[in-house]
Length: 372
Image (cartoon, rainbow, N blue to C red):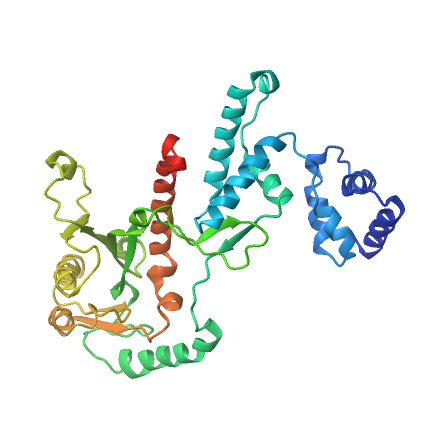
């Protein structure tokens, strides 16, 4: 729709001075072949994304009344109550809660709801969110350093790494013209991803007046860390790609049945200790495992470079000594940049974390566990 068309939109709005549904219907008849209310979404987006009058934007965002107002009213109260407790509200929670409310309404008032079909579809959820002016917000991280402030320092770090370390270093018989003695398949990165029983507590649907969303788990016990994934991957492609997962578990593992242990993937190393995080002793064990896998993949004579953050266990002298004797250079990222430059945080670690979060989310949403 061109500028002339949008002027006509404003003129139609001023002439009708009625609700937005009639405005959109009239415009849809003139500019498209649409006739049903559900199909004017693109026109609404076009109207609201251009410089129309603020009144037109506001009215065009309004939607038709829902035939399930009773269900939506109860659902909105449930969402508002959870947000008052600073608990996360996901789309899965809203859809399953709506289905539960519908089942309760159908049981309590069969005459009214008999023959009515309600599936809590994705389309209905989008309209419900729009009707109640809800928004999808991320928990504030509290990070003081932005990417713009840290960019110059990180560029200097890369320049020093490239021209003052990698290029002058001669530890291999054959030097790659681009990568020097460390081709991509010898570039490793390792980091830890914590796994409480309830994960993915970063984003939430919330009410319009919630300007600073705080998110916590349904109970503090669920938020306690139970596992830590120690992820290792390289930059190789195809047959040269290499990576694995070491799982650090909280506890002794003595009550795990042998039949269950036999079902574990052999490629995942499972470690047990009192605390489910990587301390100095655990990192020394993981370092020996790193060297064993590196030798198995590239041979004993090959040198590698491993990028990691400044975790206390990483900078431990014993850990550095183990890696050094195994022909692995440890390269520590600059301070305050882990959340920006750590490859595992931004890529595979985040993907695994989200996948596990979805699986646990579905389990918690099952039946009676949903409301606990």
